[in-house]
Image (cartoon, rainbow, N blue to C red; front, side, top):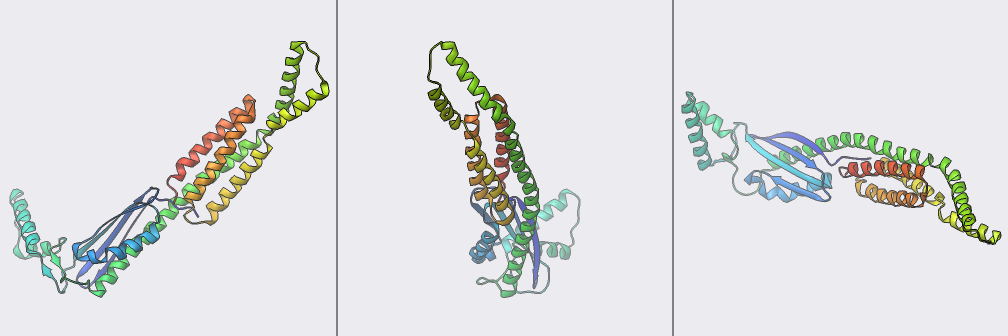
Length: 290
């Protein structure tokens, strides 16, 4: 099943005195490029979070944000006085500028809810808080994965439509193949007659057969059709199929290019250009496929 590399997910979880929020965004990239921003108290869990996120993300440029907000409930923690003083000073200045009057109790309560004001005791994260953090991260990643699947369905519909269009265009070549052979035979015979020289008709027939066989595109058409069929199978059945589908489009491009070089006929070359146009659109869409 095709998934997009573009996605967004958010989830929240609660621990005693804390509300933890995880938010993740991802864009397309050849490799996994993961940036994690989390509160200082959670630094010890960064490796675990990174491994958890990498398992779901697999590829893409992703940003994972974790924030922790105090809910004002009872809990063990230490007040970061520098942060408290900075917030207090800024809020008082804002109040004075706008003619606002703060009550001491509401102001203190508001400051204590701001990020990084209340810190846990140094050392390991309390188990309940660590579990809530994992729950939030897993929830955000699950929501992102659902978003990717939804976007992937849209991508899949477009990709398969264009693969079918390449096959349809390939089959429109057939009526021109027979007429092309007759045109080539006539052109060769007219050229020889214009020279006014005697030739061995048997030898001419042999050479003409050899020349026409070199222009035959049956093998290219068969291989291209097989690549298109395999493309559909991979898109339907395999996860993280982006790279494999990219390899298949390269093979499809080789067959289309060979078909064009052998065409030797204006109508066929025009169809080949249309096939190349569809293939380029497929390649552009695959840049965003996981």
